[in-house]
Length: 210
Image 1 (cartoon, helix red, strand yellow):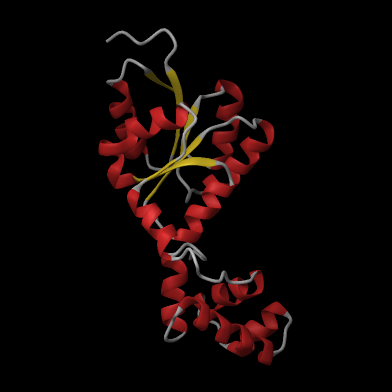
Image 2 (cartoon, helix red, strand yellow; image 1 turned 180 degrees about the horizontal axis):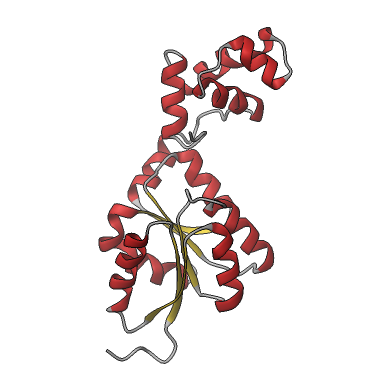
């Protein structure tokens, strides 16, 4: 197969070799695309980006050593025109927003790669933004929701780790009454029945991760 004279140069970043192989297979059949680099964590991604200057980077979010989110922020600080497509298994609205804020121009679920990867790459390369349907629905579902404050997120993260109010107060250097107030706000804002339910919602929406 002949590669076009000016193909879309792609870097794929994921800590699962099988997924990288799958992406290489899908892209390998396209005359207008070329994989120029691969990386298995955020630090490698930054190094490879500096070396290869890809047109489009496919970026996983959850990776060892350095997350995809941190890598995108670091790369965009150096290369303002960098274009990213997040590839992930998560569709939490908070995570989608965080990724877009960090510079992602596309958001795609890994189980949709075979169907939507090529069209998403071409759209992002052309300067468009594109979200998979699930990510769009997640954003729409929570568009009017009041966000948790940073302090409430800290409390929710410690709840998820199994801490009682007294332990949370000690770890955050705040009073138990302050913790109770934040817990009440968390349950209200998330529409949660109890602390366990709040943890589940927090993880699903990408507010916290374990």
